[in-house]
Amino acid sequence: MAIKHTGVSYYGLNYAEHAEQDFEEMVQHGCDTVILAITEFDMDFWFPNIESIVQCAHKVGLRVLADLWGIGKYFGGEPVSLFLQNNIHHRQVSAFTGEVLPNVCFNTNSFRDYFKDLCLKLAKNTSVDGFFWDEPHYALPKSYASITGGAGDDWACRCPECMEKFKRYYGYEMPRIMNSDVKQFRWREALTTLSETSKALKEYNPDLEITCCVHATINTYYVTEQRGYDNWDMVAACPYFDVFASTIINWELPESFFRDVTERTVAMARKYGKESERWLMGYNKRPEDWKQIDRIVDLYENLGVDRLSTWTYRGGYGTSVAAPDPLQLWDHIGENYRRVMSRSGAAR
Ligand SMILES: [Zn+2]
Image (cartoon, rainbow, N blue to C red):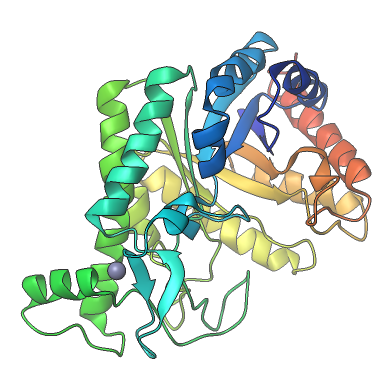
């Protein structure tokens, strides 16, 4: 068992010559993949520069994955959304209160077209190696057993478009209480959004690699997070995904969580013939003991994880979500990346 790829996310999409220096630093930190966190603003304003930046990454030997970061507040992340700014419709609606939420309804044709067009624009005009679906989720609750947040009962989306679609399929009005039809509807529609765009990308270029990264949830018989992608069997079975990943776990959580989530991630990926990926928290928090990073990386490797990734370059240095001692955190992650890549014989 060996780690095949080591990635890190990156925000700097402004000047290629600056990005190139950062990419060299990533290589020195044992990375072989950079995940470009591309915002809707970047796609609109900085688009002419993106291909130059992708080429710089390739020049230093990095694979490049595009992450449409925070788009519509559908994927995870802090960026503001141009879609929400430019459209007053197509938003998610709270089931319990009927309030319109500041999150796109990704089950609408309007957003699905927008998302697909942005991805195809990148595929056609740049030489990215693939795409990364970053924590796609419905707005609202994380439920009782959430590793990543607090409890909640309300859910979305009960917008007019979802309600009409639900009634057409099930023959009765979408209820406010989540029943099994609602769960099935939410899973199916959520996956359709990603599947349709993934299929279009693969049809354009079958070599584009697609990773789907879902929230790291407990998913037991009694509790799930209900964010729409918590039925891991359904997600991992999607024929257009190459890699099944689960997200970051806070360093402060017990190692039993790391083990549980990782065992289930690897098992799910293997069941459907995908590679597995686990993430490291390289922003926001640092482990109290730096050696925890070594232990978790060893755990991931021993449990058969294929790929490691870290959010984000330089521990989030200079941002509002920087870890304490961000540069040291980045260096410790880099040491681990070099360690596992030298074992796999892939180190440069
Ligand atoms: Zn909706």
